[in-house]
Image 1 (cartoon, rainbow, N blue to C red):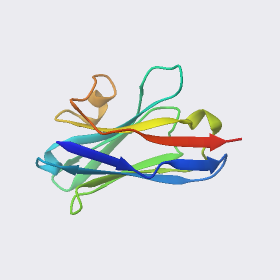
Image 2: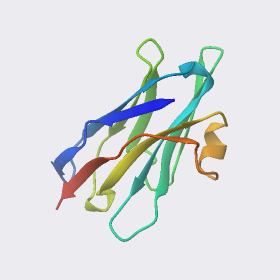
Image 3: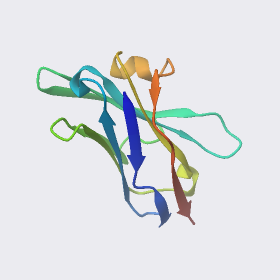
Image 4: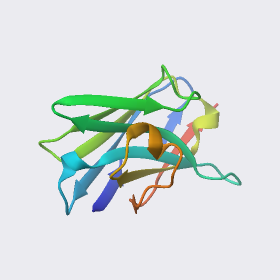
Length: 125
């Protein structure tokens, strides 16, 4: 699976940004897709993940982003999106998309097998 993330940038606190991650190489629908982030001087952390089974999606979020971030996937485009709203300076990080054959909840606990390159998100105060 090859993953290509895009959409990062500079935004003011309270603003919004949407990240995209295009997947290629394998059957998109059989993989759980997710987003992780790594802030300067900190370890990479789970942000959110989404699975797709029988036409239904299930998403899982880190507590720090619940209610502000929304993950979605477009199977026709083999793309997963991360809509980020009410951004805070502490959301500043390099964001990575990831994929694995697991569950949405398990992705938060085990490092995924496939990673895309990171995209920088900077939130100014």
